[in-house]
Length: 181
View 1 (spheres, rainbow, N blue to C red):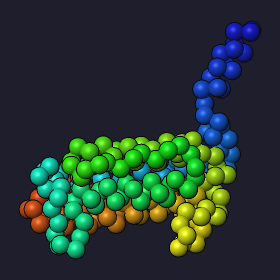
View 2 (spheres, rainbow, N blue to C red):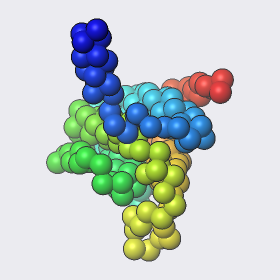
View 3 (spheres, rainbow, N blue to C red):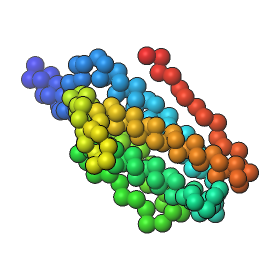
View 4 (cartoon, rainbow, N blue to C red):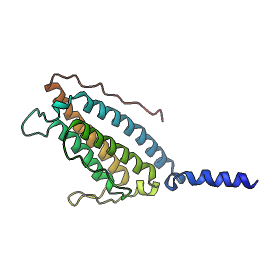
């Protein structure tokens, strides 16, 4: 009998504290659905990034725009800033150069860190209505901050289509996998 209690205690300790109490059905469904779609957007973002050869990472469709590599660094940096408002863990550092390997590693680290933050947070943190993450913007809820990262990624990834087309590269096909929820 004691062995069962020990195994139960060990199993309970293995579950992160934040994951233990997601009793609000809306918050739990929102988190799980977002994580599913965040994994999809990571895959698609990396497919876009990978479509550009390394020698095209400095290319710009217009002199006023960021280079292709800079565009993806911008996506990750801004998303890190939104999610940093939760104060959970440390966001990955941006690369020192805009080379393909360095940019890709940073984008992967950013997506993974944001996933980790959402997996570690509590439902109260997710539903909190008043995170102040920028002095020039009004407070955002936790769900707003994640949606801001999702939409920000979509916006700038869409711009990357032009960078690829200017180089006569056919962009990867967009995918969206419904959750069925």
